[in-house]
Length: 325
Ligand SMILES: [Zn+2]
Image (cartoon, rainbow, N blue to C red; front, side):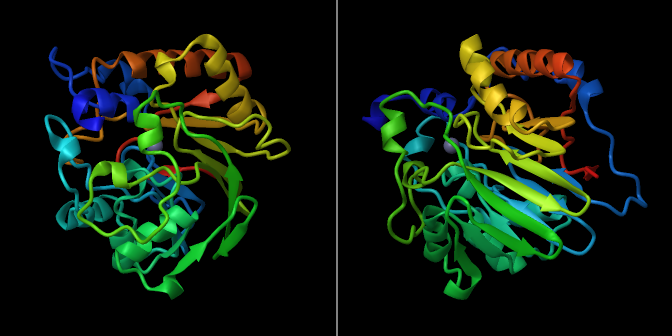
């Protein structure tokens, strides 16, 4: 079935892939929305955004990674049918962008390739414990991460890394239309060995990740899906919100997403992410996929709702640490 869909269609269903024929999207109107870099002498918790929902979270002693997706394979044309292997050169460059040489832990928001395909290589490079769903654990196993470096976590679990406590909450993926939804849903039930097609990285569990620290609490939502009530009673200071696809949804869906992720948790600052075209490598400036309409609409919704609620919105700059608290 997949072979009858163009890579553009498939990619745009996963998030917002494929370059526009009208030329690159102009990010200039959004430049003023970029968060300021953390001051040199800042001694609190920082976050560094490295595309899609890859984040480096640090407090000066401990480094945590979300996703660690750097390969960004080009799936245009017949790319979806290609067998993919994590790109060691791009992974090394990506870790260097984030100034990461070692990390205590890496987790993923779910197990699709645009989040989890590099998790094993990144764990082996950095020594990070892979703490994640059984599907993410199977990606790590398939990539040769030793069992004593893998911790399978269930929804409701927490794990301590330095002064950070990571917690995993139930969520949902952004609703993908059929047939792609079924093709890439469900768990990865055995160690995933590469090379493999993009569809081998099945979704597994879609989690919301909450990271507590004595200085403050952070929420990471990779996909623009939500589960009503899952975060009830969880207050956070900052939320990184995946917005890919959100700008293509009806107002009622956007309201539901906002209420479940932001209404329940009351952050004072929001950082939209997962808006960039991940078929482009990280040595090109991040830009939205397609004609950018999904990004423009999603940003307009988020800005309007945040403004009404008195919440600050900023785009996380690429590869620049931002002070969280
Ligand atoms: Zn996904």
